[in-house]
Image 1 (cartoon, rainbow, N blue to C red):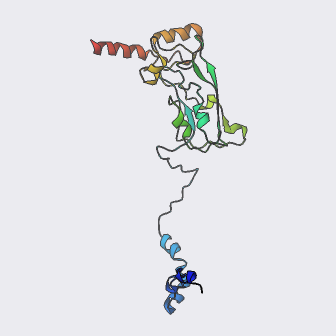
Image 2: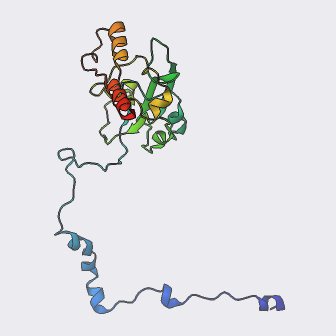
Image 3: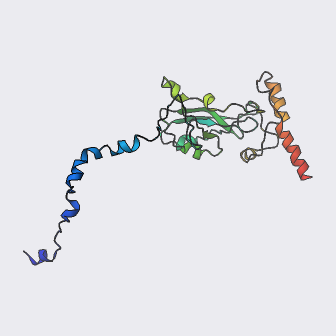
Length: 232
């Protein structure tokens, strides 16, 4: 053996006590067949935890990621501005957005654009919530609804009318002008608390048969009046 090989450390064999088979006594070997049922015997008398779905539905966690919803502002205008950031953030390419331009006679959201076409393909969606994190206006959120299966593939592509939340009490169905004297930044900051009488009159003049007119309430005017009283 050369001098060079003599100076190199030799490989040490592991301790056979650490890697060898465990030696059992006669009693342990006798109880081996029974030990295999240890988990069964330890759980056989515990309460049953099986969920009887769909006959008994267990509530989900508060932050459960379920069906998406497109939200509105307090006066009824849509929060979605058609920026497509949710579609870009989606890792599964499940969202398709097509923006439309707001006009004086067709104002659907504050600002210049709104979501004209909005689709979510739930055959692709992985419910990661990246889309709601990317939304700058909190237009897109996720609910606790998880029963979204369907018999056809076409039915699993949800359109805007299926995702847009219905009008709440007092809201006015768009399109209609923004609250007078406000900008889109005022909407984002929550300064709009409901429709004004001018908005209601505009809808009554242009769409007298709109179903939201009988329930519309000019709450924004009341808020302005209260703010003036506090200022004085």
